[in-house]
Image (cartoon, rainbow over all chains, first blue to last red; front, side, top):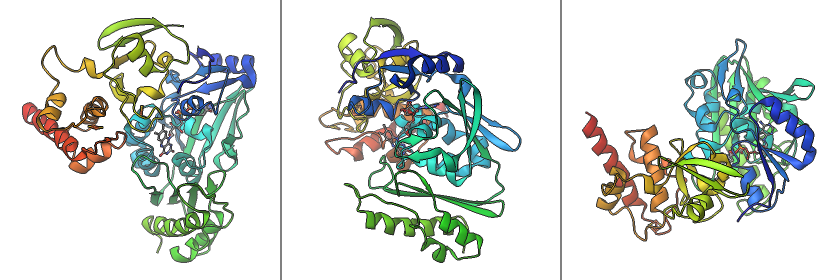
Length: 275
Length: 157
Ligand SMILES: Cc1cc2nc3c(=O)[nH]c(=O)nc-3n(C[C@H](O)[C@H](O)[C@H](O)COP(=O)(O)OP(=O)(O)OC[C@H]3O[C@@H](n4cnc5c(N)ncnc54)[C@H](O)[C@@H]3O)c2cc1C
Ligand code: FES
Ligand code: FES
């Protein structure tokens, strides 16, 4: 399987990438690790006529302590997240979950920015960033703007990024973490989650986000509200499917997904220390 | 477009279409047919090579993405007639049956031990999750990797 023909441009700076996007408009697609885009292009489900390769923008590959928050460059690879000592202490949910994305080969190439921009509800890291209350920095021709992770995912494979914008940084609030948990239910080791749950309890509040329970990654707001008003893990988890629209597919019916969501949310709350 | 990739230590140039996959550049342009294509959908790991020392699936990379980088294929592991220790451990422990998955398994295993020189059996199984063996010879594959790890740990102690 070979993609349809396209022109290939390698951007050697953020400005060069933005200029290429401005010039080629929606004919162009950014290429980061390529581990979501290239499979789609091989199946001809995506046929961009220009690929702008940002994979070598090492300026956007970093994990820094920025004072109030942890700043992560969009081109940071899953493997970098997995082995980061800074994340291991400041955001262990993220480094742990990154170590469960696909397989080692995928983690060596795939990027955090690509995972978020791709906006696949079945992906792990979008839900993790939502649970942690992260913020995304988008850079376009008129400068940069912050987008809250809760507002970033707008539809199936759709995000709040404009076609002429590049996702440049992900910001994770520094959490005084009491507990966290990542639950990923799948049949075979390297698969995507049939359902997944990311939970972090910190600074007096609880963030819970769901993988693969609708057309976007979702915050389980009913669960979060219940925990805030003192509900037990079991009582809060009973609300796990509120606001979700689980799909049926070859792996699971929507009923089964709803069942999994309740079970995994309960486990996730318990593992993160809620009685 | 013109690309130059350091393949098994030697600079190799070629004129490729941007859509050329790295595995096709290696096999069809350079004649390095040790790297196999199994699934062609990023799932099986038969096409695993190293890019700048880390395992990667060459069916899920463009040749253009490797321009200027260093690639190692199964052909680059042995030193003349002397097999790489991982290749020898696969041979000694019957880590292959039909052999189709073997180049990818060996490349993934070498990368695994680079990152974790002393893995447990479970860590080897999880570390090879991106590689499928259609002959299902996993038991001896894991045994081969553990033997190689034990051997090199013994040697460095
Ligand atoms: C076999 C396999 C198994 C996998 N398993 C999992 C899994 O279990 N869990 C999981 O979460 N993911 C999984 N993935 C997906 C993997 O995590 C991808 O790496 C990731 O989703 C996309 O990152 P990328 O850097 O490869 O992006 P690319 O494929 O390069 O790009 C994806 C999309 O994002 C856009 N984009 C990329 N970077 C930016 C940016 N900086 N700004 C704006 N737009 C951008 C691109 O234009 C494209 O539309 C798997 C992939 C494979 C091949
Ligand atoms: S051929 Fe590349 S992963 Fe199967
Ligand atoms: S030995 Fe036959 S596919 Fe693995």
